[in-house]
Length: 333
Image 1 (cartoon, rainbow, N blue to C red):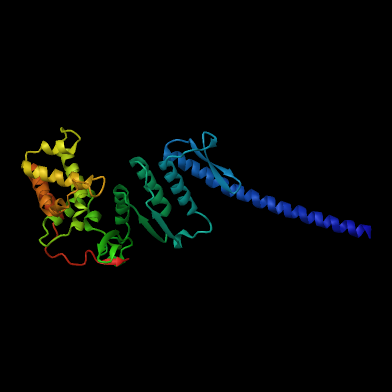
Image 2: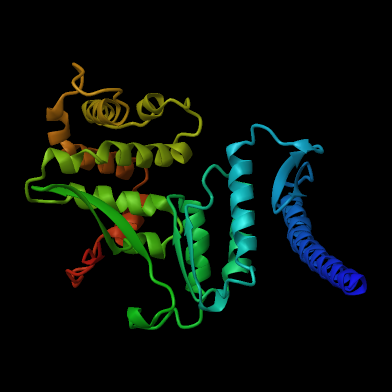
């Protein structure tokens, strides 16, 4: 009787030992599985940030970010963006995710990054997502958009005449208003943004088309043009008047052009692109109504300062006479 009882207890202990051994093996595998990605991420941190100050240390089933061997405090926005991006890209290699059949969404992945970090981020993204089944990339950053656009333009089959047969498509989010209020729609990307390397082309096209409109335009439509016109004028005068002060009004004063028109341009830009609040005495809505006329003045100033440049830009941005009407069709909402 006692022998049978001892044998039963021994079997129970042996089972517990086996169970503990199995649990130890599982935990060791988890540690190894966590440590290998951590070591790989640390190497990527070093390449990305240019130093090995930030590191991932394995803690239980997760990680701790350390700086100089102690838990990191007050990470910069760029460091947070880098950490999130690199970790996300590493997660695409998880055994539970089938990248070749999966969908990857990157929403403005380069916010708060400087130019050098932006190009490094793009390199990591391109390498880690090239085999994705489907991918959506959303961004407000024109430099990053240009990198993605150039990548997609070199995809096999991207030159097919039928846009629906191309592996990559380009869209833009267009915010507008109607009698029911504000709404957003996804539309085909403005052709100039896809064809040219400079945002300047697109902004110039917006100003040129607005200045040549013959029908009535509402104040609401003109609200965007002071900021657009300011960016165009600043970019143009940056190389046309490099000797002038960094102040826009001083650069404009250095241009030999009609003084009354220069004053009207500056009033249009300053009043409505940098206004700090609504209802201020200088916030004269009648100035916005002059939008198309002021934009014509702006284009005349550019032409007077550099006729060859102006002529070349007009040839690029003027819509062809046989252009269709489906450029702004809504694709989806």
